[in-house]
Image 1: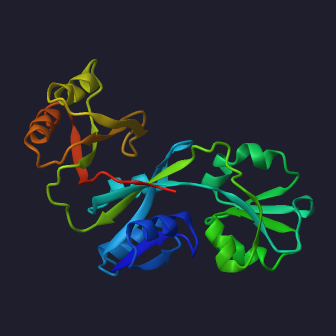
Image 2 (image 1 turned 180 degrees about the vertical axis):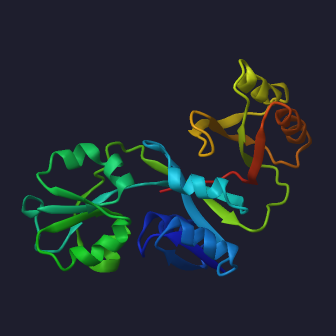
Amino acid sequence: MNVAFQGDRGAFSEVMASRLFYDAVFIPCKTFKQVFDNVNNNKVELGVIPIENSLTGRIGESTSFLINSNLNVCGEGMLSIIHCLIANDNVRVKDLEQIYVHPEALTQCRNFLSKLNCELISWYDGASAAIIVKKKKNAGLIASEKVAKIYGLKILKRGVQDSKENITRFLVISKKTTPLTGNAKTSVVFSTKHKPGTLLHALEPFAQENINLTRLESMPSKEKSWEYLFLIDFEGHKDDLKVKNALQELKKHTTSIKILGSYPCGKYYE
């Protein structure tokens, strides 16, 4: 089985993919678009994308692609993100002049990086920056421990993220849907009219059916200024009777609705 992920070898997305699928072939992609295209074009069976982080919240780009694609969410997993400061063997922390860092990693390691007198260079993927760092005397990067091993670099400091509780949730995307399971979760995106109480009425059916919401988040709609989409995750499969009833009632209070997928509840991995 082939599984696509965004980034180069050693990226956290590959680490997550390897935890979820032990014997798969992992296909690196430079962009999230390439991950979705590869699944759409049957070049791979599955894709693994980060969707939200416990410190920084929703990952906007991957979320947008998911909402606008015809693919289904068929799985999930949570990975503890341990960022490392990495450089060549003969480099010390005080020698560093430049640090390559992914925008997400920059946000997650802001306190640590602010104490270093270094130029911070935004890079699309921490793993790919390792190739550049290997050729520079006084450069480092923020990336996973696996990156250091793959590219023969040294870990100067491990765990430089601002909080130990730094966890990223990943989703698995596929052309296929997941059959009814007993321990499932469902993701939905919808919009409502701008009237008092519409969001309340939209969510009431879940309370009435005793369905637990595990996520509720708004994000700007790209179609019209100051209008919003609502993302919800809840316990249960879309083919459960009580979930069907709740979704049927939800539709009455929305202007658009899309079920992103039902899938087994994921595990936490370190």
